[in-house]
Length: 167
Image 1 (spheres, rainbow, N blue to C red):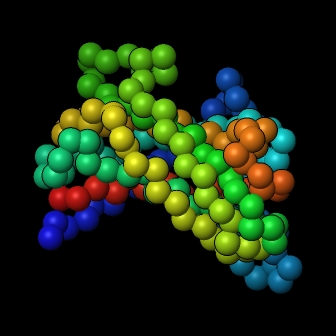
Image 2: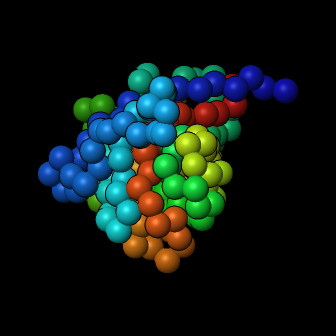
């Protein structure tokens, strides 16, 4: 059985095109621990950008081999669905455009909330993007709470993102 590699995705705001996602903390009833992340408000379309914290290693097994693992939390007690969109582009430096119009893949996942203050985790399979070793990968992660599949009528915080693959 192959080992699993996890590479953190560095997230940063999309400040000009869609600045609705903002860094925030989740206020809980005890105020003892408040998870931090990018707040995606209910009734808005919001997105953040990201890139791998290191290039894709040559030891990744398979093409494409990987998932994007998202961690998120809500203050809502509802257990309805949150829909995430993930856009992917592997980048050859000195060659490839960073323009999202040239990106390889648009992926989605619908994840049911596990309840109030419970951190959720869901995986988005990188189904058709070509990922080559030695390259960086750019991401755009979006929540469109107006999408019919997104039934969670609440704000959510995206608390982290990882690229996970078999080595």
